[in-house]
Image (cartoon, rainbow, N blue to C red; front, side, top):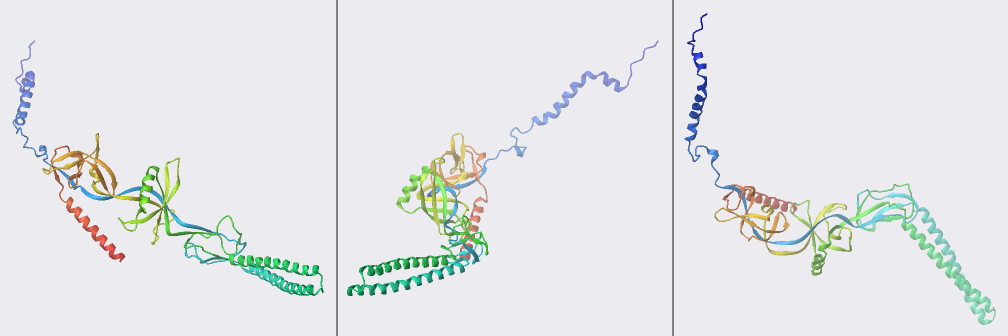
Length: 411
């Protein structure tokens, strides 16, 4: 038997040299890695790897202002006076002289009760009064005659005394009749129900033709006086000492945002401090009086108020968004002359119209970062964002133009 000869096929020779393949693969890898190793060690070849030199931020300048010392609270509007209209006589409602929600003045006629029964009672009382008055006049004449006859001895003293007693009795009767006439006349007047104050009427609870009971449990209508109005609110009891102190020095103003004019406030005067503090919540109830000439305030309306105690001069203020809170407390970034930022701990005070009072840690005129603080650290160089100052100037100009237009409209 003959053995097969080795094949001269190239593929066979490749498989026969298989152990040398890892060497070839290693050489290929080295070939591709060598160009990367010869790249610029400074990394100038890739733009994305270049580090930014400055960080864009928004910058504002701290200012010195006069700030009001205020206490804020939330409350609601109350009518200055409320009158529940009730009939003082029992009778049939004849007519209603207003519509629901109408404005009425003091003395305006509201309801009319059928006056005919009361007019008849008045006429009856006046007739009885006239009858007894005539009898009294006759008794006076008789008493005078008995007095003259007694002097002449024509009648006894007993008869003269009886005549005098009759005069006294009829005098008392006439007084009772006069009182009955006055009562009947008063009931007749009660048939015309009038408003005791100027205000706005509410819902009418009854209609003409219904029987009205004197002093009924439910009123016929409720009238609320809304010029002026009261703002009722509460403040923590810890502020009572300050409120009493500054109120003793003068009248305290109470401010309320005007919803009709943006940025404006309605001004009232503190008129009431309750004599008892709520032991459960520790608050005390206050009231302020507002003129409400334009009737923008309505009873039951929820409101925000501020009691202005006094003013505080030379206050350093910054926009509230400039202040950040860290592990060591409040801080902000101050922009130095070389455009680097300094980490500065501060002591913030009260807030007022989007600005925060800085009690310590900052001087007037220093520049602070108001936006972009998340990318900053002490010593980082910054650049003010382009257009931020211009946009604020434009917004201020627009606001000024808007205020001028509003002022012209009100004129």
